[in-house]
Image (cartoon, rainbow, N blue to C red):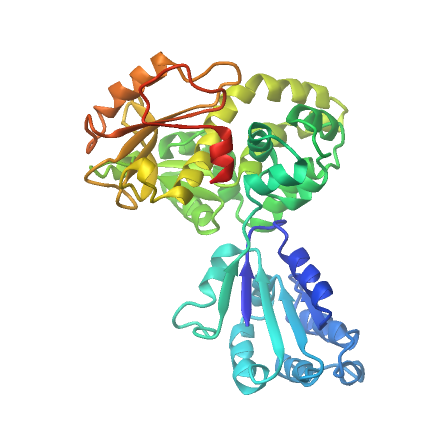
Length: 439
């Protein structure tokens, strides 16, 4: 029994379909759809009746009265000569309609399914709910193998689209790791040609995927969407989000907790030797959703009236500022994958640092604890400028700010990451787009 979780449209169901096709195994593929419990059972029975298993004729003979009966019959269609892949897609939707389904699956697994040649796949897009399935006290505790299906990596996107390292990272800031968006990108074209074409089509997945994902993820949680949209416009602090979203302190706390549980946003604190819990910042976790909220959501009316050219111009004008901030979490994730690495001293984790007044902001701070470190091993600056290299001024600022980070010293390593190269000596480590893509 394998539980597959991952964000909507990330390719979970397609991956399973491809696995079934390549394996040649018999399969029953059922997708829940937030209907009544009776309708969900009827739909499952129909999929069972239409399958190529030995149990199909039994299911086709008449309606089944319970999930226990349906799963027992499905198990009867598996044999050593004919293993069965049994898929329940969008399990969280089925749980909404039939809250007892977890206990039913547990009982049927223990009684019959586990002993037969069956691969039971439970798929869900509600990441928090799927993560909780195997927790202690839940019916399926101790029975599940769990797997997270993440987005494609920037390197995979670059390989698929035949792009240079810099162009691949630019593409990732717009489409993230969504296979569906990569499929509409013509091989070798740059970001601006891709956007020029797709912004002329109101039905392009680039335009509609964001709204459809949010509508499915937050069907009744409108305040969570309000908070998310405030973060998507660039607000990062609790107070600024509250003012932009126009909601009370308590309502925003609930909304942010929902967004964090669903892993739609992340919450970060300054990384140093001194904890600063009151300086929290929030950011949209997914690059595509961050891009969509910043540029597409409010521009849909213009796109629908055929003025994608105006949206294209707005994105182009705002891109340097947007990309400069949006690339930072990608680079931190890449460096985190490299750690530990002697080039970064003894650091095992990487974060960033800022003070209350935001007069000091350091893009990269590395140490030995997950949330902070008594000794800071490295500090770094990210410069994602198209035409200007990381220069002497950037290095001087990094050295000045290093002295203001608790736990840093003159021995703390200096790291630079630059899109366009380096025009200064004195850094202990220089990272290029190629280094980030290869991490």
